[in-house]
Amino acid sequence: MEAGPPARARSTPGPALERFRALEAKADRSTAEQRKLDLLQLATDHPDPVRGRERATVFLDRGFAIDRVCSALLDRELEALDPDEQVRRSTIRGAGHFPWLDDPDGVRSAVGAWLRGLRLG
Image (cartoon, rainbow, N blue to C red; front, top):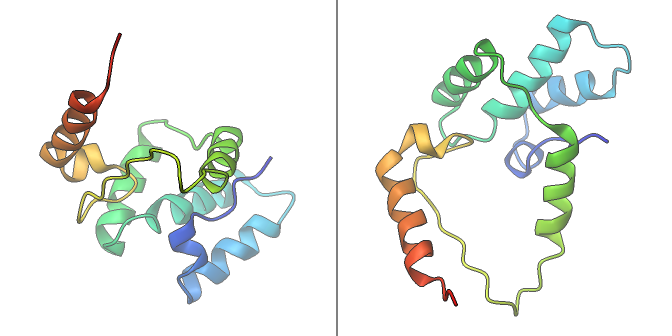
């Protein structure tokens, strides 16, 4: 199950999207091509392309991988959300795929607000 490019990548025209689509379409990718595909997928999910590439490189260099099955399932769940349900979405400005690295205080604040808003018991 392939996740496909993130929403930001799908809406961003240009050579990066063309390279992503070409690599994604290739059935027998080499290890280097798979890394390039992963790098393109992660880097395009950051508002700043240079910082996005840096973060994606660190992520991949540390041995982390994209969980394509989980990504695809999460995408489906997000698309199926009922807009009338009680859903709260927070935007952490300037943060991309790694918001806890880009803006730790912003993440702390957003998660804290969400936790304080929970009705437990």
